[in-house]
Image (cartoon, rainbow, N blue to C red; front, side, top):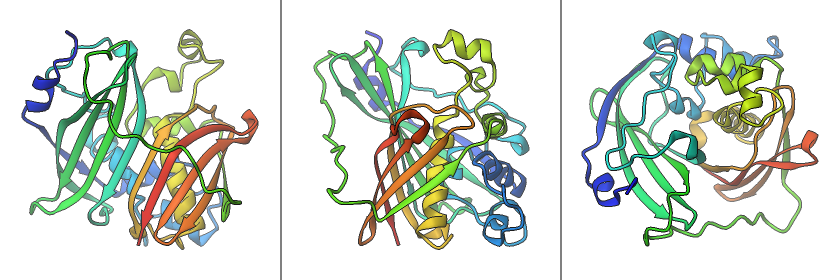
Length: 289
């Protein structure tokens, strides 16, 4: 069987060292479209090392960029799982912050398969990564949902039900994030060099008109929009941030994020106006300080 659930869950975590510098953080923020108005002090705080702030979603690429000498993401070593990579989709992403991410530093990142859910026609593999600093203090925890088409039906737990509903009232804020036509070319230098995001011929073979923006770029852009537009440009106010990836966008299109706030919980819905409001990120929430 391609997925041996018992073996996957029982496997020892894999561990890697992640190192990053200010340069990696600056490049990551530029890949999210920061600094378009370079004379805006609020934007300058994302793209200039003097007073640099670090978005929590930098955790997605920490230790994988130019300073690490690695322009490809670390491979996912998942014992007990042998599936065709063409069958998998990045279905969802969650991030929990335990401390602010420093503008330069290092971390010990431990990866393990935390859950395998049976969705009938697909399996969902939940890959958890936990990062600690050199003294063992926790920095962040991520949980990536990997959808493996055609690998379900093994009689396992279907996993938790998550509502798609947003509040039945007008959004408290609507945040607009334009993308540039070259944005995917910049973002890919932080980690993901998949030709789907650069090569028109490759993108067409994959069923797209042209290269698409990375899902994790959309994830970071929405986080930045909320930090700037709701949280007073203070990334330390983000405690956790979770989404499902619902649709792709092309560089040059726009992400429009609706925000509903109930105390320290934000409900988010990101759509693309150029696609008649088609969804980009759904099931999206953020817990804040």
